[in-house]
Amino acid sequence: MLFKDLNIIKPILNSIEESGYEKPTAIQEKSIPSILDGRDILGCAQTGTGKTAAFAIPILQRIIAEKKVDNERKLKALIVAPTRELAIQIGENVTTYSKYLDIKSTVIFGGVNQSSQVRKIKSGVDVLIATPGRLIDLSNQRHVDLKNVKYFVLDEADRMLDMGMIHDVKRIISKLPKERQNLLFSATMPKEVMKLVNSILKNPVKVEVQPVSSTVDIISQGAYMVAKKNKKSLLVHLLKDESIKSVIVFSRTKHGANKIAKDLNNVGIEAAAIHGNKSQNQRQLALNNFKEGSLRVLVATDIAARGIDVDELSHVINYDLPDVPETYVHRIGRTGRAGREGVAITLCDSEELEMFRRIEKVIGKSIPVLAEEKFEIIEPVISQKTLNQIEKLTGDDKKNSKRRQYGNKNGNVRGKSQGNSNRSGKPNNGKSNSGKGNNGKPSTAKAGNTKANSGNRSRKPSSVSK
Image (cartoon, rainbow, N blue to C red):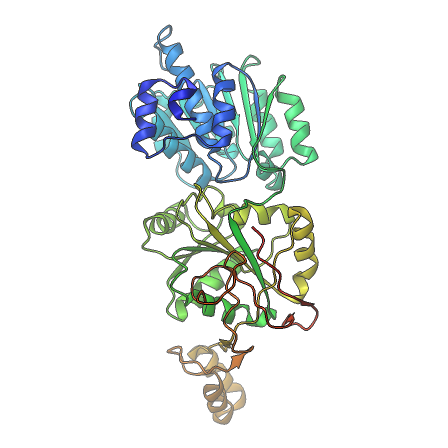
């Protein structure tokens, strides 16, 4: 099926074709006709399946049809997303699809001055994309009038629940007209989301593209069992592989993301961190550089990573395992987008083995444990300030000893080798690694059992989960 077979109007078709798309994805094929018919939608789909176009295209088409009767510019469609990155991404897509339409849209989110956002709203918009907090704030200030909203989209509802936004969402819904079309999308369907579904959707059409909590089949997955203290060294080793063209490294915490990015920059691997404590300008600059290819490594927390839509992202590396197993699905879904293959590598230490098993249970697959890599252990570098403090406390002998052990303030380090000389542990879709040793994809090792550096787990590498 082609987009032209979905009864989409010519101006939107032209913008779609200019974007390089001809065939709709599964969720677009299933959702667009029902939305055009005015039905409520419950969409269960993983990231990277094209759900933004699935709701944006038919909403734009319906708004244009109504303008033939009422040409006054009013806020007709409200799209609510959990993070500013996702809101910006949706806004960019809406702008693309409405290129040849008399439709104005804008995006509002917190963390920046509201003045420019208020000016755009006051100038008149048909479609508003918003994060919950800023929307409630501007609504309370009477800058946003929701009385004419006919199309309400709640995107990534499960993530909003994870982020504690459920009460904000309910407050927004209470401000909307009772007569409206509701479209709710979520990658997973926990009980809390189903309660929300039952409260706002009327006889919805359920569109399910991937089974709940499943992982995209084209993503190759693999895990290294490694001591926690050696994760940094292994990460640096892996990133020396030039076949890893672009990668998001996931950290559990904001502090961890900063430290990982700093450690990588210290060894000459350019990286930038994005998380909630970064300013919007910092986050957007890092994200733009990453999308344009001038930045190869992006270190992100789970919240900040929502909305990162990079079709050519080759790899995802889980430096830390997430606190919630379903989050693993969202993480690796950043790669393998738009029909391309992707690679997801997990660094698992002994404290994370229980979560590792829970993730395998949730996704219904075993994640292959990869053969040990031979890599240099990077010792910490003591700063000149710390050396001066050591000197005051213990004298010159202690200072000189530390310098010999750790190197100087310029970052010179001493290293030692760990693991065996087998470099076959890079994921490669389960094929033999003969002749494939540097392609950056999970492969399996045929030699013996793979032991965790922690000494707590031993497994034979199996074929890569696809």
